[in-house]
Amino acid sequence: MSNARLASLDLRALLLVALLALPLAACAPGAFGGANTDDPVVAELQRAAEVIYHRMELGRLELGAYTTTPLVDARIPEGATLTLVEYDAENGASYTLLLTSSRFPQGAWRITPRGVARTAGG
Image (cartoon, rainbow, N blue to C red; front, side):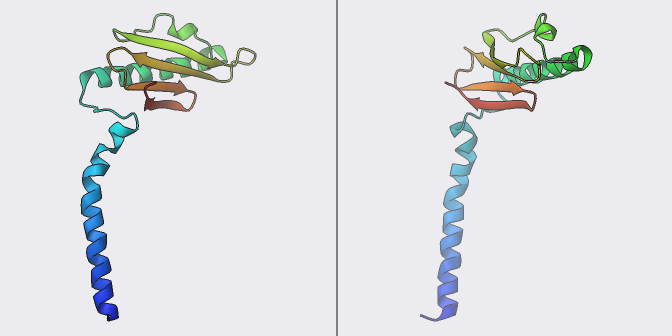
């Protein structure tokens, strides 16, 4: 076969693979703990996780270390649980919180000094 014919076949194969992969790519966020951000439950949990993160950051600025004190009156959505997974009690330099919900069991929100990350439910 000529080089031109091989290049044409390679291009067709590449286009076919790309066309077949597009529908799968649209499903990928759900496969890895993602969620439809249009879902009001997901939006409410995402917002709560972001508010908790910012409260922790403001607490660190005001108190000089991370502490759960700023979360005492934090409002969390119905069915949600906020769990302290990890905390540097000696220095108050780091923490890990996990926000889960019975209303959205397929995902969770991990909150750390780096920010908020959605994870697969467990």
